[in-house]
Amino acid sequence: MKIGYIRVSTTEQNTARQEVIMRELGVEILYIEKVSGKDMNRPELHKMLSFARKGDTVIVESISRFARNTKDLLNLIDILTDKGVEFISKKESIDTAIPTGKFMLTVFGAVAELEREYILQRQKEGIAIAKSQGKYVGRKRIENSNFDAVYEKWQAKEITAVAAMKKLKMSRSTFYRRINEKSK
Image (cartoon, rainbow, N blue to C red; front, top):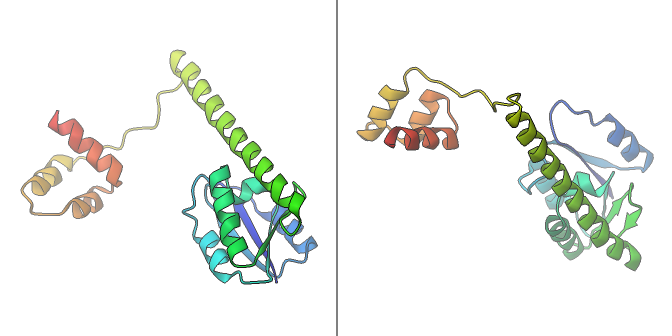
């Protein structure tokens, strides 16, 4: 069975171009994801890996849609190989059914990781320049008028941290950052 995996980084991005490629390649089942590829915490990826079985072929439009670093790419390929599943990347013309395909997979995986690092580096440099020019001040701080009251209940162990976060509509990291600020 031909299994397609499509990923875009944000919900605003469109998957249509990748879907057309998958149809042209005769993909029978498709897993579509709109999340960052920076890590392996991707529900559709895990569903696809669980579904794939011996004799299947997983097809992606490009390696960067499948993994963003060489380590994750090679781990994913190992999982597929252990299950007897082949891997094809259309853009890079990689097919793990042949020896040169396996070699090229490693090379292109390293290139994709390098490109990701370049993007992050350029982003940091751009932010630093914008900050120095007073054009970038970061994300707006989340303010909550009843933080002190909820904080006191949490301190008195009347509510759990999770309950406090829910009441304040704050993420775990924001909540604990505010706790640290308060204790200073």
